[in-house]
Length: 105
Image (cartoon, rainbow, N blue to C red):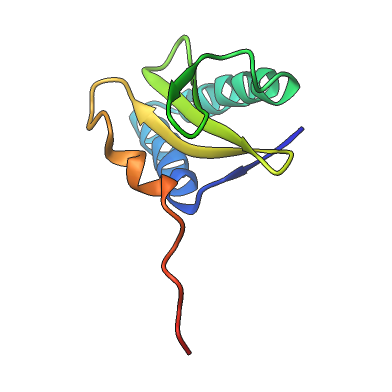
């Protein structure tokens, strides 16, 4: 199964890589390797992690870094809703469950 990011989740993921790399050379790359390992497990079996909230949102925790990947299966793909730090703003990503507003035009 393939994955795709919610746009805000992709931005926070890339910011995290950059932040770790700015702290120590190679640390951002180590974060990225672990992130990809977790996503490989998720894509191999997206239902292996427990449902965290309504809407079939699931959590996959990273081991070495204090982040959890929140995702759901949508249309045969894993949609990453957030890459959430364990100690910051616990439910900030819930607004990402809402469909985007319709543009009139």
